[in-house]
Length: 99
Image (cartoon, rainbow, N blue to C red; front, side, top):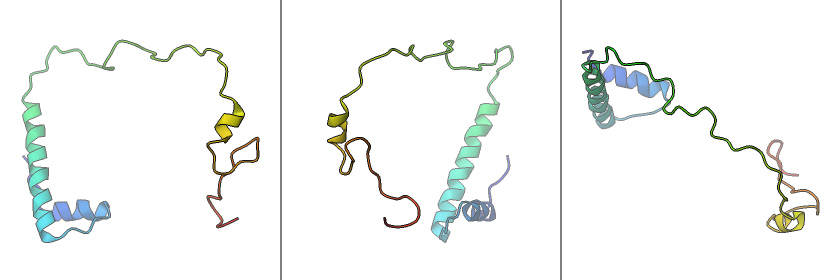
């Protein structure tokens, strides 16, 4: 089994944008080692003759058919909005600063 070094953990942390101290590096090294040991134990499973499982269940589509239904009254929906123009919701700017 490949050994995870402190340098490996430092590289993973750097690629993840994390700044880890020595204690954290050691803690994560142990956790990565435990994870790899678990994956190694999965390699011992005998899976010959097992059909591949492409989906967890046999169902293809869980969606119900669309059904036409009466909508909520616009006035009651707009009543929940802090800002509207009696027809549409008004939202603050996302880009470009204040209005």
